[in-house]
Every structure is written in structure tokens, then in C-alpha cells.
Image (cartoon, rainbow, N blue to C red; front, top):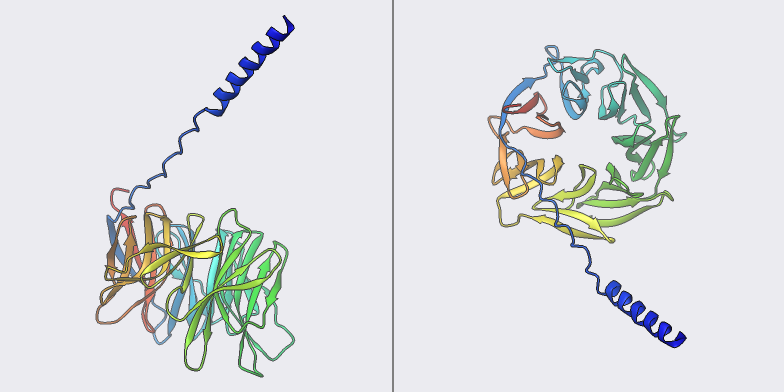
Amino acid sequence: MKKTKTFIFLIISSISFLQMDCKEEPPVAPPIELPPGSRDYTWTVDTLKPPPGDIINLYSMWGSSDKNIWVVGHGDVSYNCIWHYDGVKWQRDSVRLSSNHQSVYGFGPNDVWIVDAPNGERIWHYNGSQWSLFGNYKKPTQSIFYLGNVWGDAANNVYAVGSEISTSDNMNHAVIMNYDKTNWKYLVISDVDVALLSIRRENQSTKYYLVGAYFGATESLYEVYEFDEQQQLKEIYSNPSQIRNVNLINGKIYFSGGKQIWKYRNNQFEVWKDFSSTDFHIGTLWGKSESDIFAQGFEGNTYGIVHFNGSDWKMLYPLNGPKQYFLSSMAVFDSTVFALVGDNTTNMIVRGKLQNH
């Protein structure tokens, strides 16, 4: 009787094991298809005019909403170099800070940063009511510091990147600074002969990606670097003509330039989109999702604001005309987009508003 019970138990156990072993795997969910971004924009233009006789060249823009946007740049006098939009009109912030602001970025109406050059050791902050010099971080050398980009993924984790130009050998040395909610400090002043142009980090990642440029006597190279928690700066790409921009769209990193967009996966670059068969060439990207991307770009010989809807590119707003304007920065919101364009004498905000919004 004991043997019979044992035999029955073994049979039941075997059947249970077979049932468990043959259990079907749950179906893999298909990738989510994002709806194509709308191209149904109505466009208007605002011209930012300094006082007669003054000259400005604005090239960096950031906003917390379509009712709070900052624009900065270079001018012959400092009180023309910061502009603000309140949802109704643009106006100069007549505070005298610097005549050569390079980049603006923030985390809300009461927390905005500006870096400048060639005295890049100065960093400015806006607290919601006024701008002030947050700190002067000049090194005790004869070198020239240049901070060209400020960006962060949190109010207590802000980065500024650029270069130190040595007056002894005229070489660039990569510079990375960080703000931790208390103060700014230098993380890296590298012997790498490159001027860092931008820095971004993908959501949930511990690694930052930077694009820099090397300006040699006979050629210029664009290089991509990886920067990790150990504060190691590692070159992962170098080419004179392809990848020139690192972009963050909806928390994901994309590299762009020419006729391709790349992702960096498993320590190698993978082409995400290739439009070599089209007339489009693209530069920096701004967007809401993988199917709603704006860029500075060409369609043939026509330069302007182009758009990718997940399937193809389209020229939305040509900038060719009596003058050749350059698109330097964009701020993209749910129903409105702002593009900062200009040349050496004219600065304009091209604003697109989705119809029926």
C-alpha cells in the first residue's frame, strides 16, 4: 500500500511538472505606436529690436512654459542681452550682467541659470525677481575660460561645459562644472584638446553624453564623449562630418547630423533613422516624442524649421529669403513652439501654434 501511494504521488508530481513546463509564455506586447505629431501650425513672427544703433545676436532659449521664456546672447552693451516673454509680449531685461551670454537653462520661474564667455568663470542666477552673479570661479591661471552650455536633469544637479583655452599653447582643455544645490565646482579640466559644446543624460541612466569640437589647422572634428559617475571622460566617437549634436527628447538620447539619427546602445552607435534617399539634412533636434520632432535643417537648398512625424520629414517654415537666417534654439510645448532665428543684425522669434488649441 505504501508503494502504491508513492507511485501515485510520483505520477501526480510528474503531471504537475509537465503542466508547469509546458505552460505558455505570456505574449510579448507589441511596441506602442505613437500617433504622428501634428503639423497644423499657424506661424507668427516677433522681432526683438534693441535701441537704435545697438547690436545684438541672440542664440540660446529656454522656457518653463509658453508664458515664461528666456532668451540670451551677445550684444555691444550688456542691457540688450537678456529678453523675456510673459505670454503676451517680449521685452528686454535691462539688468547689466554681461555682454556675451552663451546659454540659459532652468527648472521653473524662480530657478534659471546663465553662463557666459569669454569670461566663462562667471555664472548668473535668477530667483524669480532678479538676476545676480552667483559666483566667479576663475582659476589662478592666465587661461581663458569659456562655458558654452548649461543644462541639468534636476535643480540640485546642474552642469556647465566648455573649455579652458591655454594662453601658453593655445589648446582647448575640456571643462565640466557641476552645481549640487550648494555651489558650483569643477569636476573635470581635461588635457583633451576639445571644446565641449553640450551635455545630456538619458532618464534612468548613470552616464552623460557630451559633444565637443576640435578645431585644427587643417580640419575640424566633432567628437562624442561619455562621462560616468567616476568622473571619467571617454571618447566614443570622432568624425569631421556626421554626429554633431546630442539631443534629449522625452527622456531619451539621440545623436544627429546630416542624413541620419543615431542611438547609442551596448557601447556602439546604431542608426535609428536614415533618410539618405531624401533631400533632407538635419542638425539639432527638439521634440515631444519619437514621432513629433522639430529640427534645424535643409530640404534641398531651402533652410528652415523641419518636422518629423514618425514617417517622414517636412519643411514647416522656410527661413530663406532676402537674408539667410539661422535657427539657433527652440522651446517646444504641447500646443506651441518657439524658434529663435536671426543673423548678425536681426533677431526674431518664430512662433507656431497648433490650430484648434
